[in-house]
Image (cartoon, rainbow, N blue to C red; front, side, top):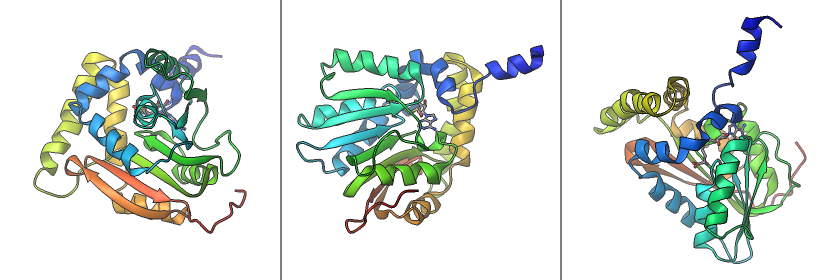
Length: 248
Ligand SMILES: C[S@@+](CC[C@H](N)C(=O)[O-])C[C@H]1O[C@@H](n2cnc3c(N)ncnc32)[C@H](O)[C@@H]1O
């Protein structure tokens, strides 16, 4: 292989698990700094909206370092969580946090991607994905997979960043995404990764379009909650109760 090809091969695809392997040691710190800690509130709201019952089991897709999985387990002492992510290093950081929180008996972490989930149909009572659907190369396929593994009547919560488009605070939020995020990211980690973050947020579809895609995938939309002037949305949906899953 030529040197150029081998260099290309060494460069992880943007948004991929391999790219997140490089960010894993600083990911939590960067997350808090860039969102001013507001992401904690968004996660809590997501957990509440699932309306979990004792004995339920939840899939947290693109779990990364496990923040949402840990939130779910702490809020619901009789619920189990499986975290799935393609980044081995993010999962490693997550496993350490889970162990420190004494939650190893209720949270398991495993490798996998959203587009091809390693679970049987109707396995989970609820599925979440926080800031991860943007990274799935085939989003409708990932949504169909989430639906397939969720029991009829179960809830799916997708938390995702986007470019604020309307409202008087939108220009300020856009300034944060375009100017602050890449600079802070470049300073603390590496320019490439955080340029990607800004570009992928900018390219994410408007909330109405994304919600329409979820409906096209066969989900019943319950609500779309807007946070921080539209820089983040929670897309909450339900798998129709009367539906048996058809293999994709
Ligand atoms: C921005 S992080 C979010 C992590 C975590 N959910 C959180 O709230 O902090 C995005 C995660 O998506 C993962 N990812 C990348 N491609 C993916 C895919 N195809 N399917 C599932 N997860 C993916 C990355 O490895 C990374 O851990």
